[in-house]
Structure formats: C-alpha cells, structure tokens
Image (cartoon, rainbow, N blue to C red; front, side, top):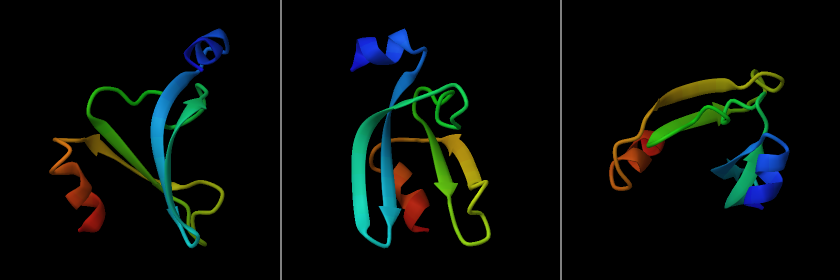
Length: 76
C-alpha cells in the first residue's frame, strides 16, 4: 500500500467518516488535489458534506493536541 501510494505520488492518510449509516475509520490514499494531502503532524481536518455543502465541503482545519483532547473538538 505504501509503495503503491508513492508510485502514484499519493499519500496515506487515516480518515474517519461519520454519516447516516454509522462510522468507519481507515487508511486510504489521497492525491494532491485532496484537502487531506497537505495534512501533517498532529493536524486535523474536518470536512462537512451537507445539503448546502454537497459539491464543495465546509472545511475546518487546525492543529490537534493529543488523542485525549482532539476528539472533544468534534463533540463540542
């Protein structure tokens, strides 16, 4: 998976999805045109796809603090 991503000039990112069907978390490859491509370190990105933002999501980007603190930003 790592070599495949590198050969395509993609990056691997751990991405979670929450929708009406539940939630899932997985390692995926992203291309340079993905908002997640430039993510690094403890940074976090939340992309909201809604009825109003169906074609272009509302993006919230910031730095994550730790595994204990970062999830509270999603619950607030």
